[in-house]
Image 1 (cartoon, rainbow, N blue to C red):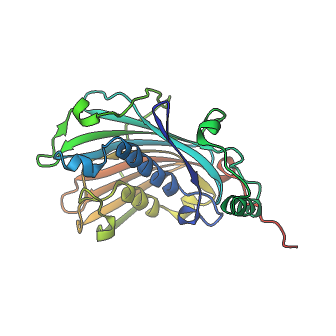
Image 2: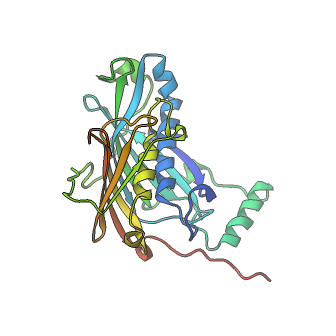
Image 3: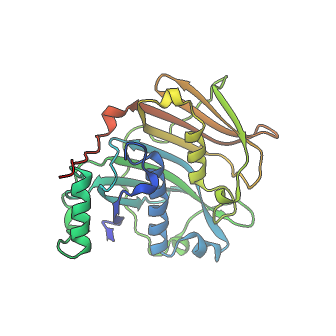
Length: 294
């Protein structure tokens, strides 16, 4: 559904991206960001297959995530994205996730009981348009920067009305320090060598942007992550990694901040870098309640 030029849908947190305490993981947010952008562009005839017919494609250059609360398994969310008016070659897109009406479940038992009532037609959900008017503070905000490339030359293409068609814009933007510069340290705490597999490759025939996030979150110190949750994340997609390349993922930890970098082992050229900030898990999440069986 499009509301105020914002692509808005309902989402239930399921088991595919939850952690050992039944909380949504950072990858849950990242997957939803990608799917929302794809859904919005596709509704306007701007999906990658649409653009490929014009000899064009989308690539992401930067992202910024801010997480204020982690929803739990079976929580219901209203999630949305919108495109801002292009600035030169750059297409900016923002995201916001909210708890839906009664979406923050009191217990897993209540959540499943409600789910069954809805499935059996005993209870109806409010319309997204009705709930949109009552949305409170978002539990997640994000900004991203995209560029359209000529598929043959790899050169950026300035978007115009022919490309964007009927896509509507909304210039709401995440306030604060977005797309901050990421400085790399002189030394690294972890360095791990690996190669992208076939499962890492996307529709553009290079590594999917979600895979970079999974790599950097995988190659971190378990001691550093203990008792913490990701609070903010800034990412720079520098160059595309391809299937079978020899790569090195590096991380450096200091207090609650981690710097991440992925380079090619052959020449040291940079592929991806990121900065993550972490906070005490008690500040960002609640505990899952399970009722005693009668």
